[in-house]
Image 1: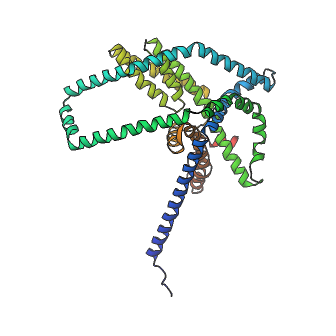
Image 2: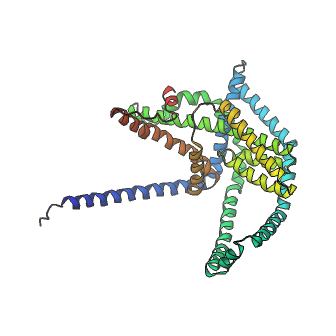
Image 3: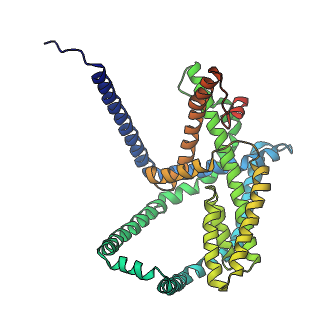
Length: 392
């Protein structure tokens, strides 16, 4: 039976339907791959997280090992000295800073219910005095308010159970203890074999010598450059910010300054997050502790000074003009990684995945767009990091 040829509109509709189907299949395949990757990461978290920690420490400590090598020490001996110094620093912190940190954390936990009750009482008093308080109260007592209350009552316990389950799944099990006990050995191996890995890693790629292999090597090198800048640069900057925050808040007499510095340093690995969280906590604690406006203003002054020093001196000297990943890209990658891939491992591994995506886009999308614009007689801004990648 012969069917008539489709009209132009019918052909466009058929191609649109076929394209939509293909896109849906690709999205489903990508979602399935992410789900499978998250499942594997959750099962292998006790193995992968210690490896990731050792890799990050290797990124940080390699310049120090190279410094000792330039002083005529062999690499194994230089690594040994670095590990000894790292252990001594850890023991020094364990004997001086950690006890005070534990004490401040315990006091903060004990006093948190009182702070919460004080906040609730103050908010209730302000709420009753406010002009729109009565209208908001009427809304809360209406059918809409009843549905909101029911939703909060049902969702809040589920969120708490989910968070506790995730926390327990990440930090429980003998395998975690064994895994982290192997971190020093992983670290020693990574540092010892660094030169061999740099020189011969391309030989282990399961691709024959071709243009494709050159492209793969270029992309992996760009990813490694981004990770070096991020872990070696951003983590050192975050550490410096944490120390300055702790000293600054201690100078103005704020309680729990060490805890706030720890928060700023640890969360500062994700750009902007550490400073923002520590600032919010410091403002609240200053209000509870001093009951005035002067000390919250001093908290803002300390925060501003720390940000000025970080932006003017720390980042330029540690990171310089080397191109890493954009802060927004890091934040989105960590959020997506913890949500899709699951837990801390997903958040850490999301950074290399984001670096891979950035390198691929920089190589094949942004570069192609620039070449197309140049071919048409237009000029386009060169993507950040391209010059550096080409030089390396």
